[in-house]
Amino acid sequence: MTARSCGGCSACCTALGVTDLPVPKPRGVRCDHIVPGGGCSTYASKPSSCCAYTCGWLHGVGAEDDRPDRLGIIVETQPALDGGASVIVLRECSPGAINASRGAGLARTFADRTVVLLVRMAGGIGVMGPQHRVQVYQQAAIALGYGPGTVRK
Image 1 (cartoon, rainbow, N blue to C red):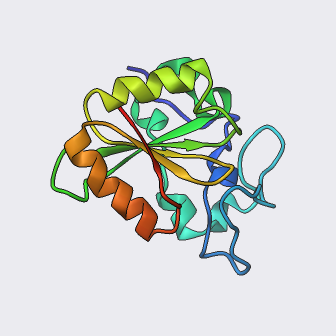
Image 2 (cartoon, helix red, strand yellow):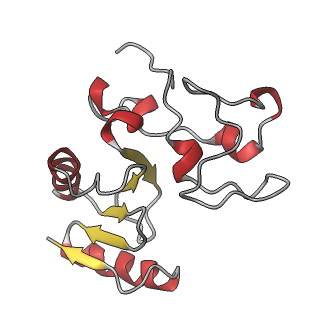
Image 3 (cartoon, rainbow, N blue to C red):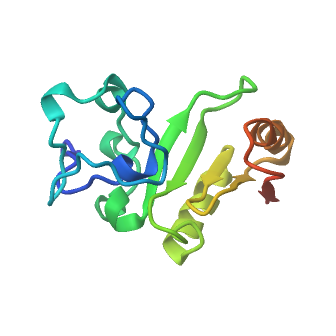
């Protein structure tokens, strides 16, 4: 596989919150440092959280056309809360992308194997996957303030 690079994608610069800026940037708000065509105007001195972050697409998750700015979804993997397989996080960077046919298909594919957290730009979080593991994550989502959660099989 050819190594991937962000190129013109800066989806994470809007979808993710950055707390280590002088004025913290909330998730879902476009970063003031994005430059036209992608990239960061403070790249050499950008926050450590930005330096440390890489999305799943950069690690080979999904097809070439699934780059977050094209798909409208950032794919991430997170360690499991319950000792099971890693969790897939699908984080919208374009409103409604999780419900679009490509996003919904991707969610179902991952949910056949593991827990999938669906983080929507409009707020709220959905949880899909094997039922015995979904309950753990639904409770965690509520504890994190995402509301009652939506469980889908």
